[in-house]
Image 1 (cartoon, rainbow, N blue to C red):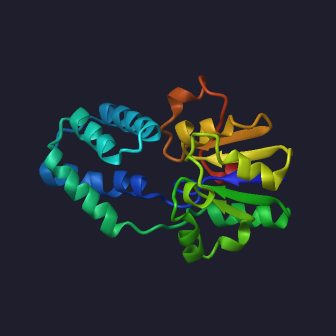
Image 2 (cartoon, rainbow, N blue to C red):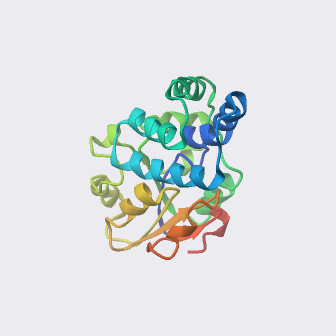
Length: 213
């Protein structure tokens, strides 16, 4: 069986989610910022969608702060802390999932927009699980959701069916549509994508352990 896995927020906690869960609550409390849960969730989803359509990370951060009515000057603290304090760590379900793929003698490929994915994977000690680690820099191709990196994937898997597993409907989900024989799974660990369940063709799960091919 063939598998394509995203990396950030699929196998390991990514910097954006870490900032969302750790830094933003601190900033809200520290500066007593206005906070409405429903608005916050809506803005963060829209920001995530925008991030996949625009490479300008600063523009996305500006959108989030402006939409929430927060002082733009505070974004520097968010960026500084994320850059200096974030440390990648595997999710609890990642190692068991990868070990199961190894025991089944499956072929597993990483396709990540993070150009440092190979280095981080080596640091985390999970590189032996993967047949290839493909990134925009490594392949000289455009990032997901563009379908360019499928050329490199198909060179490995041929015309075989494949399971695509990621955490982002606008990046991993749309990338999965680039190959007709791909079944796309979207991890919704924080249950943020409820409104998309009935309007997209992806299979939503809360854990890697919930994936039953």
